[in-house]
Figure 1 (tube, rainbow, N blue to C red):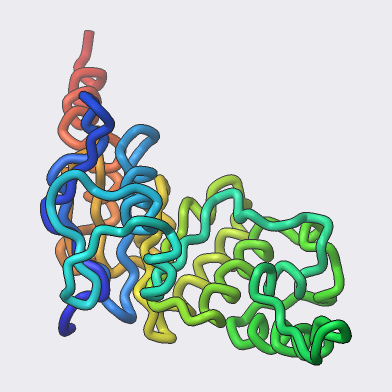
Figure 2 (cartoon, rainbow, N blue to C red; figure 1 turned 180 degrees about the vertical axis):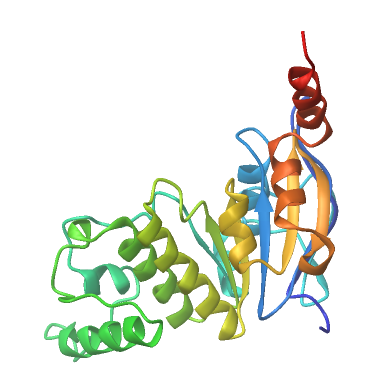
Length: 259
């Protein structure tokens, strides 16, 4: 598949005496979905922070397009096309959908003191970008807070794609969503992959991961306990590793013994 867009090799992160991530390696390829799974405290949040530029790694190497990088800020990661959509989405609930889409990147025209927002153009671009990603919103003048969780995720994903993301890091995008809304978000992940983006799908749900994933990494207590391509692992094996692996199997055997 050529040089990965992002590659982590032996990456670790310590906060003083506490080791949050240890010797983690993974690749993010263009046009591929890398799923990172794990329960709370597994190291998923730390991994996101390293790849998105919030925290520098303490050990190992992180390369982008084959060049070693140590990000000093999220801006540096974003300038290289690495966009992160966090679980809280960081939207302004009372502002219109199109205003949230362009928040911080508004189109303006004219000369001072007569410069103003190019509202018609931003509305048109927002509507086209959402439709291009298969996201149906009846009125882009609605406050974004009135949309469903799945629709808000869709706006955030479409925004990242429109503004040039090459890698899309999604932090638990299906958490707390119903079946239908989760399905819509998974379709958006597949659409981003099909457009050639590298997607990092952070989740604790192996069923969602297996529906769209090409590559799976399971974290436990800051270390990778599974790193496999889709052809190398079944959903049952992925679920077992996610649920505790051998420990869960031993407990199941113990509980199934006759008293």
